[in-house]
Image (cartoon, rainbow, N blue to C red; front, top):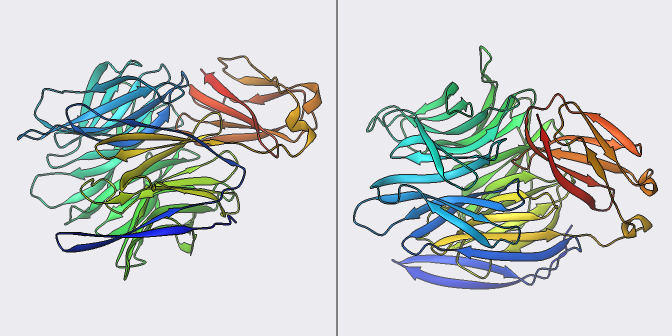
Length: 482
């Protein structure tokens, strides 16, 4: 467990007779697995920006998506895409439909097999998908949903190389009937299937997060009228909902993200925020993967009030979370963001509080191919991108040896060969294969100097590998499967 010497400052601010207590934590002592990386801020000359998602692109750089709100009398919100190099330096920035009046936002993005991008969000009240090439040039836009307010919140790639999006559906403006929404789509923008859940008389409903659960099932997390829900979806089954559960663990108990427990696939980890006597606090719970039954809370220290917005599993069988104040999209409020890294025993290895700004909100976290962590979100009137580099102190002889590995053939269609140096044959090596969202989908031990693994069960696409021993990551890179 992380030992801390925590100092704090309590700042009392009054705005419209509202008393806000913001606790800023600092002087944290970290394990030697933590090393500070860098941070970049991105602003737009003509508008107020927000950041919602980040990925590592196949060329080794990073891509962030969000929105720009142009300060005009008419509503002018537009999708904002930023591309950086490996050091976080901006290479280019795109704002789409800049001269149009309307409301657009980019909530999440993914890179396709050929390097194109799919950006999902909303387009003038439609749940929308924008496809661009690798340089961010628009190729097409497809809109889905009813005639009311619709939005996509998250996107992943499924086992067939198609895509799954989740969000909110409204059939008619003014109907006050909203539903959680899930849809499958191919790379050409054709809808393959769609499902709606939890018809509601309140607008306070949406699916926020989707993750894969083999074989071709999906964990969907969101909120319904002040309570969080999660469900397992098999979209092509006669009865597509395997199970669902709504959590009423406090006056309000909202959920924004969920994953399969990296060390125990019989359990799920769900994150969000709960309302109690002291206001909103981040919540992290463990539930039964077979039926969604609540098991226990996972305790941690972070900013309070607050909400967990994103959870990702990590290559060391732990997980990492990020978030901020409960109004995590509202920059009119004072917000302090945080990121917390857990080990395989669900113990905190380190935490980082964004104490340098009252307007910094963590929205997405991502583990890169070199084992580091990216945190993206909103900062003042723009985006921020923070890289926290993971490192380990060598503790045995093998850490000092050179590690030259060969991965071939690449591209690969069936069998992948991994050739390691002779000195490492008894080094307890493992290879992890991750999809392009950073989720681990395959792990196996390397027992031979030339280990051959069969990967023909994986769909075509871009993947990343990481090779580690007990103590540290030794190599990483990209694999193309076709």
